[in-house]
Image (cartoon, rainbow, N blue to C red; front, side):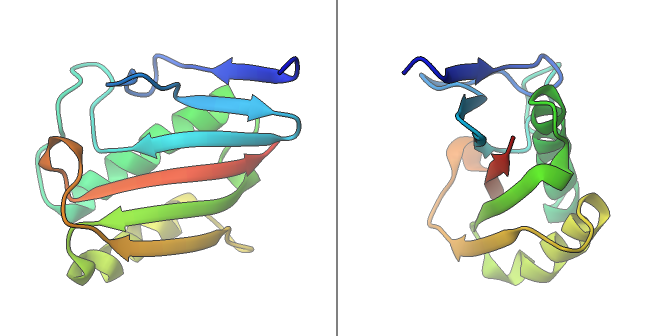
Length: 127
């Protein structure tokens, strides 16, 4: 694809597998799922769901900034939680990173996530 470009920033964790932080195709940016890794140490942040959610949104914001749009350009996010009881806490953190009109969203409970974290979020942005 001639209109495909890779977006990468050291302000977010490096990919821990064969994928890119984000890929832009046309006017859409597809951001890979982010888990609560500190981009400098590449270690999972300590704490509970609030601290893990904060780090995930920081990682998404760093990639969104590198893509040239910031989180205001988010049109859809997909949240995976290992415990749906964390839903309300994640909503509270999300409110600190997004303003109305909010992006579309899905949230599902999964059996497990990489590195045994409690949350992973992927995002689609408009360029």
